[in-house]
Length: 225
Length: 247
Image 1 (cartoon, chains in turn cyan, blue):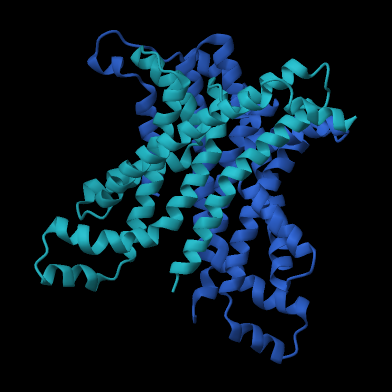
Image 2 (cartoon, one colour; image 1 turned 60 degrees about the horizontal axis):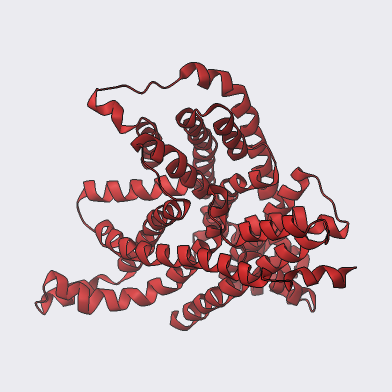
């Protein structure tokens, strides 16, 4: 009866609804990646600063996100912080906040790694020809660092896209939730619905992430020499 | 190390809401409640540790086998391994688990929750570990392999005595990162009805509305599991660095 099972995907507005769910997921991921990258670049610049206090705070911020699972962070903000401040936050907003902060921490580490891997003579020659602080970053360090950090940054983006699947746990109607609704609706008529729907979501995520991770591998190989 | 310990203090600060600090109306932490739910969390923490341990162990084995297959370019198997690595690296664990737990049952493959969770973790971790081992094996210099061959080692001996010990030392940092990653990923497994930390917290919040206390316990439990693990791994990293010398 498997040829009947797959029909569940093409009945009525199923595909369209799944697509809408996917757009929600993609929207959260996209926003968080953008905000996270901007904050992360600032973070990375801060982490190369000489001040011990600044370094300490930034490093500490990163460790905080590395030790506690992201799902726990979503819960802390969704249930804990809203409760403490007596405010209401939608699941979508909580997701964007948490993913952006997490992205900033991880991105900061990538940017720092790239900046620190640049040879010292680049900075010194820049200073020697009289570039200002901003000129040094704008014309010498950032163009070179971008090459070194791009593969890592793209990898981080795929990780963030994958992690957005967790937002279903804080009540966001994303692609997984829509899938569950479709399965629940049709489970009596089509018992194999869950196989097909989850299979499709599995493939959808793969279609989004595979090009990104391939691109990052290609860039890494290309820029290695 | 200092940073990791300090993050502990930070969470305790975080859990106490800002209202406390103005000295006005104090929100009391319900210690009675914490003590009464302690056994629940204790049990859940053991389940988390058990899942993380088996998941990590199996993924190391899968990763090792996959990387050896990739190294020797065994026909057919190599393509299969490549497909597996791409599939598992590019999809989220939650979907993999749902597919294994809800999807495959319909085709007659039924697993218990625990088996399913460990399978999912191993499926995900295996590809990460295999990537880590692959880069480690690639880092073993050609001269090492050639000298091994020239003194008459067989392929198995070459892997066992020359390649793996050196590859292991190089991969140790990413191995450690993957290990912690897998322990953190166990938080997702609660979605398929395993009473691990995350699931228990959701239950407790739903039953008693003691949000602060429940989240506090959750964070403390994760810190208790992951901090020692991360210290142990960085100790291990220092121990096995011998192969880096002389390169």
